[in-house]
Image (cartoon, rainbow, N blue to C red; front, side, top):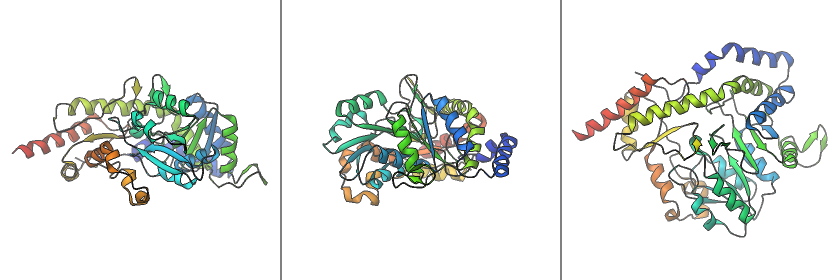
Length: 370
């Protein structure tokens, strides 16, 4: 049996007529950059998220950079973030001229809120919590810390579209939140795409201006900016997909519960913990095992695709060698990154495929006992 890690083709086929029609509509109107399609998606997305402002941009990485830059983060500043994420979270800090300060993760794979205060200095200007894998970070405590020290909070929601904590969407806690619509995300375009959400009208205008060469009106450049705009085709595709997202997220969560029920009795497998009073959207379903590399090879031999998100903690990448981060400060990140495996997860994944994956894992451990 073959089990794909993700299956974008099946999702496309389920919406083929709508998506094809939307793409052809953009081409017919020659509405390739800017115009009504990105505006329509912005209005739809912010309405569902219950925030007042949405600025569409070219990708999720730009979204973080633009938000930080327009909050005034720059040379000499420090921004605290998690030691466990994709490099876009931290590289954007460096791009502003600021320095990333890494904090270890908790048992939910998100930044350990109990260790943030120890990392704060006079140079600290902001915190970027990452709702990794679809799991909500400890936002209530993070917001209290931010308020106490007068820090900005930019939520990285690249993997957590409509995840919830205490009845509130992640991405609606901080000064701003950023989203990626990369094809493999829970809400994915067919190319790069992203956005910034905020309830701050002034910040929204600054972000929109900066993303559009420093101008809100053509040729009226108030500042120097960059070129980061959502194109019409991607916006139209996202508008087609958006009404289905809550259902897809629920299916991901349901699939995760099936995995949990089938894996919970395997002593060698640690299933994902879910934060209390939260809704986990399971962009990724990540288990931990000590025999990670062996299990990955075995599953691949059985036709099961897997991935590792991510092989190394950010502070230990060569790109951050200059920071000389003490590995003793990030023990959870190091241990977790040595053991994590992402199993197949997507809304269309059926229970038969999940059972097959779990049975392969059981067979692997039975063979270890022989």
